[in-house]
Amino acid sequence: MEENGNLTAERSLEIITEQIKRSRKSVSQEVGQSLYIAGLCIMGMAILITTCLLLTGNTLFYLLYGLIPILVIGIDHYVKRDKPKAPVSLVGSMVDKTWQTFGIFTLSFCVFAILFDFLMGRMESPEVYVRIAIHPFRIILLMMGMAITITGYILKSRWLVWCGIIGGIGGFIWESFGVADFFLSRLSDLANFYLYSHIPPCIMVLVFSFVGLTLPGWMLKKQK
Amino acid sequence: MFQPLDPLLHSELRLAVMSLLISADEAEFPYIKEQTGATAGNLSVQVDKLSAAGYIEVEKTFKGKRPCTICRITDKGHQAFEAYVEALKGYLSVGKS
Image (cartoon, rainbow over all chains, first blue to last red; front, top):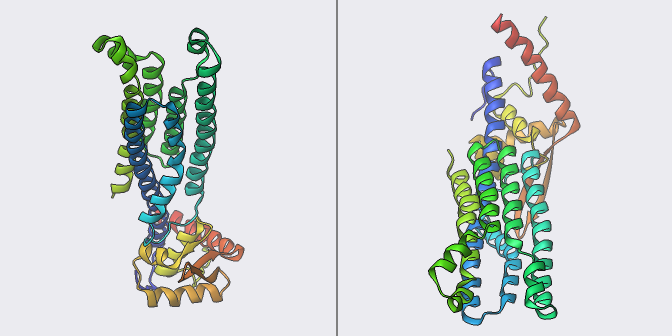
């Protein structure tokens, strides 16, 4: 872009529109990069946690999910270290606030649910425990779907909205009806059912992180 | 009657810089350079002109060990940009009619 004194009104309007669009696009790409990294981190962590659970059977390994924000922030910072930072805009800060809210609520709920289940599993009889145990995944998926949908609306990205709705509500229904457990119980005997019962949440996290984070993140990142 | 267009904003690069900054609280110099596709020298000259007119603030700081220049639009810059857009509307509405 060079100096040009003979600007027409139309060209001026074009420049203003183009720069505002570019600004929005650069925010979208930065958000896309973060969603992509978050998706990959969650998928990797799900595999790691499931492997640890299968090897030890200790459900406290679920607390490793709490490390995801630190991991995502660290990798995100490393990947973007040499790129000029997108400016703090209204769009960018709305997306940031949406995900900060999601992070605060999810982490608090997740830690509470895991500790509650851990304690109740030791304090109550199995009959009572089955009734009072909290299954955090369905709520996390629902909240994640909400955050993705809101992000989609802010960035005016229709398919991001749909990924959020399908991922969030789909995950919630899948987990609420115990679809994976149903298939698992049909495919394995009782001993193996308990051994492999840690796999369905992992598959669910993998699938819905891919649909809700990795895929839309990759598409936002690659947009022209 | 047409309102006069601010000559300081009626330039491709300066208008692009102001349009970028209008929707952001602040932006780093390399980001503005990347978005406008201008050369560092040319951009620096135009940024200085906008800064001298009080339309933007330029803060020279450090990001880690590297120097970092941050540009911020001022209230005066906001008002000038709004006035420019209003004036532009007048020209465009005549063009359409």
